[in-house]
Length: 217
Image (cartoon, rainbow, N blue to C red; front, side, top):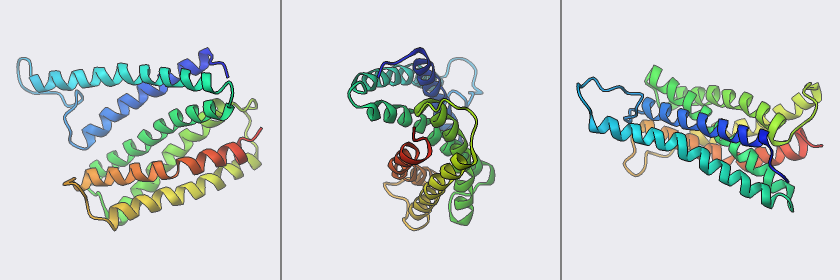
């Protein structure tokens, strides 16, 4: 399947937003980034390092994303699903970082990273990610021509997403509340790890559900 201008713009936009969200997440976890402004006078070497890291993310991520979508477009000429999955994966990275961004923000605000509150925070963050996921997958990944949403499509979307929601929150809560932090990680970092494990676990389920049920042409 041939790549077009819309695909390039969408790919770059997703990668740039991903980069910004990564920096925000790192800040909420207490890891030094350019968003944490040094109060020292003069040039701070650690600040220069974090600025370089930000520049790296904002330039390398879009470059890698464009290369990846171009390769997927070439392979997609024989198997359309490859190109669709590449776009789904890119949109999925944005969903994941929105999920983790909201989750880290809630943990930072309330100072809670485990227990029932964590499960509630995870449910809230997942909801934000789901709304974003719907529009990206409908209008870009599976390119549904009609923009009007029918009640049937909504029902199917929330059915598939609902199962994914239970899997996402359940797996994340299991990792965080049952398994103790591993590899010397802090509770906050382990909580984010739980979110990542959950997001990866439901990736295949959501793609197949959206492709074969919700946005089936």
